[in-house]
Amino acid sequence: MTTTDTSTAIDRDDTDARSEVLATKDPGQRLGARRHSLGDSMINVGPVTHLAAERERLMNLEWKSFTVRQLGSTIGAELHGLDLRDELDDEVIEEIRRALFEFKVIFFRDQPLDPDQHVAFAARFGPLEIHPFIPSNTGRPELVRFEKSAETGGYENLWHHDVTWRETPSMGAVLHAIEVPPVGGDTLFCDMYAAYEGLSDEVKERIEGLTAMHDFLRAFGAQVPPERMDEMRELYPMAEHPVVVTHAGTGRKYLYVNRVFTSHIVGLSPEESAELLDLLCYQAETVEYQVRFSWRDDSIAFWDNRGAQHYASSDYWPQRRVMERASIMGDRPVA
Picture (cartoon, rainbow, N blue to C red):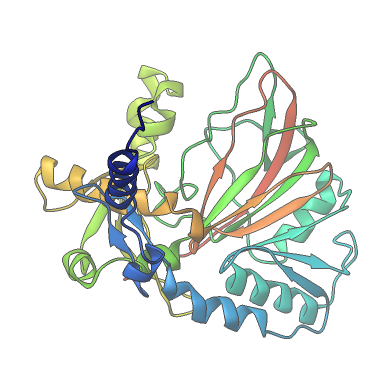
């Protein structure tokens, strides 16, 4: 009878296990309290610690006219206890404005506004724009109408501020859900203060004082007949805005470039401009800077078009989605 010596096999198994399992602690302990780049890419991993102070500040704000449910870390809140069809007192309007500036986007549920009521509410915050390139509600030209179906798909699924091709872009916008699909069609919003604050000191120094050109042709050029191109260009020349803007209502800095309307950064070579714009626009894709809103009929989103970018998810085709937007005129962006 032969006895098999298993000690060698056992030793080999132990050696393999020891060589494959190197971890003695969670990899997150190596990251500490700052983000780390992943190789040579723009991707960063690790805790987004600069959000903490703003998140806690927002959580401790107090409100008189409504209750607030904070949704994102530093962006987004639902306001409860208001009927926007009412003639709201000036004090209530100013508190809503304050909430808008603090949370960058605010949401309301169950607000069955008709077009006149929609326009009346938005107009409490300033004069309203007329958009030259998107069809309006036929009864109220101040209301841009986004009516999507199997024949007209959603195309707003890029991160952007609205109408930055204007010399004085929108201050904000009030979007009313008329009809939404049973699944999909969410809108995402990104905190562009956080996007700026999350940049390295080296990048902040690099972009200080830079300006960028914004052009309506990038998104709407195909709609302009050749015989009217000169007319439209005279009405809407390319607009030059700071890459980093100081918010008129908060005094804080935010990033102000986007992939839809920003054509190039002034004073840089095409290669340098493209590289830097790619880096800056990529910041809006950071999930920790975002909030996602799932629509129901008669929901409303009111966003600060300066401190926030937005992205309309186009995942509901061929379902029907109908929204109406009133945009509030703003001021010229300043560094």
